[in-house]
Amino acid sequence: MSNLPAQSLPSYATDEDILVRASGDFVTLAPSFQRMAAGTDGVFTTGIPWVLSSATVNFGTNGVKPNQVVSLTGPKSSYPGGGDLLAIDSVSTDGLSLTLRRPHKDLGIGSPPGPAAGLTGVSFSITTFDPQTEEASFDIKRRFGIDENITFRDSTWVYDLRDLRMATVLTVLYDRYTAELRSDRGDWIRKLGHIRNLRDEILDRVQVRWGPYGNSAEPSTVFSCKITR
Image (cartoon, rainbow, N blue to C red; front, side, top):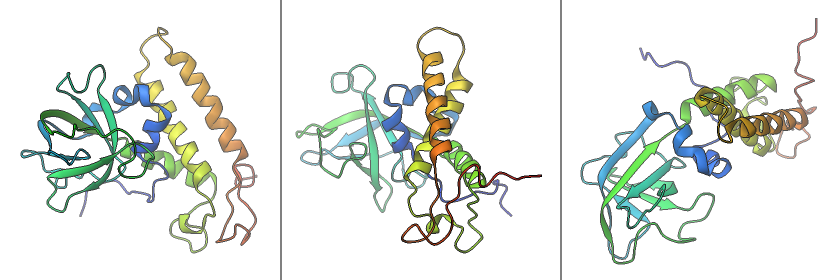
């Protein structure tokens, strides 16, 4: 029997979604104990600037998956400052390489992370928010009466998940900013208040519509799902 806690799938957001909302703080907020892979032997082969490979790290075995985020930080001449952050589009069958893309962009769009002439000795790290997004998604499902075990009330029957995705991202960020806040210096207090207000506004406005056309049942809101006594 597995010792893993019960998981409520699907989650409504990915690391890529969190990156788009909080790119400047993504690396700091991602818990280091949730690192999926890291190494200093990354390679971009000549003429294949979107594919990162490693001889020592098996991304597939480590559980790396699409929509997670890879941070490239070295060599510094190629990735100055805080480095470069990219979304993972796919993991190769043997697990030794990743196809990357710019966040929320199609393959091959934007500036590639690797030079056309190739590059070796690339430092990379992949850290995930997956546990946090699963917890936030479960909480949101409870708020709106979504139950994966009930036909016509599960996530596949929700007409549009975008508002729920935004609420999940903001919930995760609010919790992570709160957990990492150590003083009132910097701009994190301001960000915390802004994210809380956005999250509350979205939760208040959400109407979960059901079915392929959004009209198969009465919409669910945080107000309609509250228990009355």
